[in-house]
Length: 167
Image 1 (cartoon, one colour):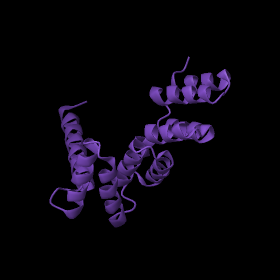
Image 2 (cartoon, one colour):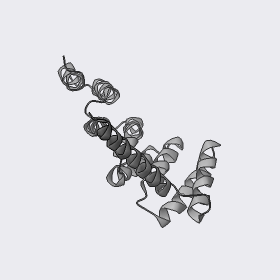
Image 3 (cartoon, helix red, strand yellow):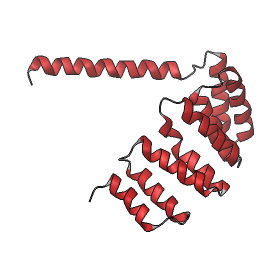
Image 4 (spheres, one colour):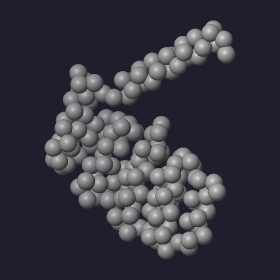
C-alpha cells in the first residue's frame, strides 16, 4: 500500500465517522425540541425507577412518531420493568420490524417471552437473534440455553454451537 492509498483510506474512514456522528445526532431528539423534552423526561423517570412516568412520556412521543425505533425500544424496556411482559414483547416485535439495528432488542424480546412462559416464542426470538449475527457467541449460548430450558435435544444445541465456533 502506498502513502496515497493510506491517506485515501484515512479520508474514507473520517467520512464514515462523520456520517455516523451526523446520523446519531439526527436520530436522537435534542433537548431544545418538544420531543427532546419528553425524551429527557422519560429517560430521567426511567433512571429514577419511576417507570409509570417514563411510560407516560414515551407513549406521548410514540403518538407523534409511532415507528421511531428509539422510542419503541424504550417503551419495551419500560414495560418490561413494569412487569408487562406481553406489552414488552409486542413493543420489541414492533421495534424489530422498524429498527435499522434490530439486534438491539434481542435480550429484551427473548426475556419477555421467557417471563411469559412461552417456550416456543422464547426459542424463536433467540433463533432470530442469532440470525442477525450468526457468529455471536452470546446469542448462540443463549439459544442453546433456551433450547435446554424448553427441552430440546442436545444434538440441536451442539449444532447451534458448531455454527458459531466451528470444531
